[in-house]
Length: 303
Image (cartoon, rainbow, N blue to C red; front, side):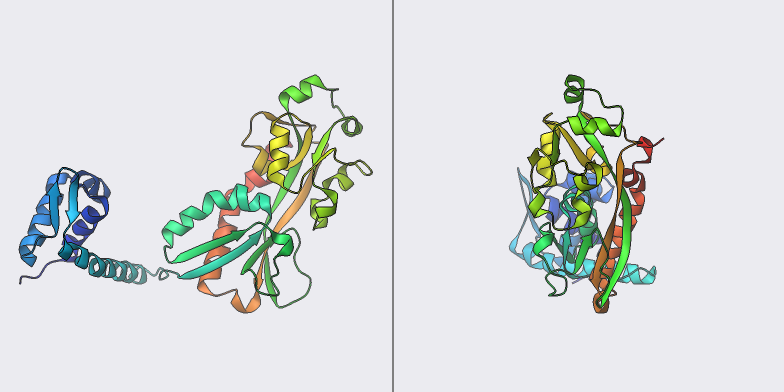
């Protein structure tokens, strides 16, 4: 048997994964004739048929099925060696469980974690948005995202970002109700907010800070439901800018006069802070938050 090269195995894997010469060629940034030639050469070298050609494309033979596992092992080792030679970290493996506030988890992390998952296929993620019943001390989560940093305990804590919240209302709601020109005018409006006896951290008690003594008329324990109610035109709602900015029907109300500032903090056990899987996610969250600084800060509304 003649020796074959890793380069030929790359073409084999591309065809095996796509089932089509043209799709494999796009993946490898070449043309389908080159892909076909490389597959023919590999089969001739191995003196075996790796694919059945039919109207649907290329289907692996039994031998091809056996080869793919070995080819993928070679692929992983080649990628690891390349990264090490380039001074990059080896792939990270394991599962990371993150407990986070609903807004940050669903409207920030959820959009960004897939890119990390693609770059680190050995990592898996569990994102919990039921933070009030998740305990870091009992190791029910590896990382927590909270509004305050723990004052005691064997924890590693770092600030993720500051963020601002503004009062928002649907445009047609604002047109149909008394104008709002100052803070006092807010008390005459229908408000949407958290169910008071489910507020598990003082940082979510927006109304006590903005409108002392005034209860939200529509209360819900989920910020997603509050956002939906505001978008339906039910009333005014306090929302983070990084969430509300995606919905042009929502208008910020006297933003320079009325806004709140909060902070997100990431915490993990001190003895696990440098574990590769946890450090990778910590660094990713911090970097992504820095890239989204303007979305979190909402400076555009204060200009």
